Image (cartoon, rainbow, N blue to C red):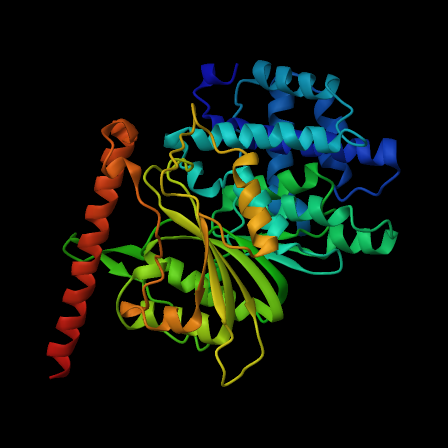
Length: 467
């Protein structure tokens, strides 16, 4: 229906977001007796009663008016525009939503699951660019089970995307108590999210709202989490920062020439200055964790082995100032961005001490001889059940090994990219992964090598300048 208008799947979800919110707000008032945050002239009933050009005009003015509101309303409708310019088709969408309810009440979780399905469909469309914000649900849920956020704790995702970690944490925490005040705090004050992309923040806010989280104030906001220390501290941080290795921006000179400038965040709380975005997110998490706080963060391989003062220095700080207790090596083929090799780092914050806080690191290798795809061999929750069990029991197995602090600190350049299993595909041609997977891995390895050369070249250039 919307494809005929040239509307992308992302735009389709965006328009559904606006219209569903208006309808559900009306139902919250009529069915649940709650107060509305929406001014009377912009409510659902004003839309549902109109047709033709009057409907299109009302919808456009509604979006403009709500974009000027504060709190959750302003977050969802920030920079909103009507992309259903055909009044007849707009009326059809409004009618379908109007007759498809009720959308709140006991079915709220079901509606939320439907909405998440739409988000995943959007992520699978490479052109939409949404894949970088979508973390596989089995990975999210396994991390939440291991970190185990409690109902009286605060949870933050500084790169929240469409809200997968916050939703999983909410589902995990809400069953821990029947106390009304604790549940109210959980819904309105415990969860915090930040994302740099306006459209994604809107999708996240709506996704949370569909699950009954947030009403009035918004648990998520748009912003660059790396731009500074906001001062807030959290008991739990759960996140998967964007995959890009470098923070950079384009500069256009007076003569029209274009150059790329790498951005290094200069923050007093960052012990090391680097343009590597993942290393900066790691430093940011170190800052925003409360004392005795804990985290599960998805990061690419380069964080574990990148040479240079920043890479080695941040890893040393992680081992000495924090209890870096568990590392999960994830399989390839589970991301919408192809060729990504990523890990989950689990660590706890500790009070300042002269002694190293990491006594031992347990590594679970779920990458070697494991080949996943997005279609035929999808990652499932059952695939990570053994890791969750090992995480809790701390007994060595074929895939789960313990490494002492003394072993780690002596590794060359403090390289923590640790593996020990024999890769069967190196000797058995029948065990080789699919050609597209192989090709992607080759490209990734070449890019990593080039990155290392650039790093060495930059350091040598810096030494030449100093001498």
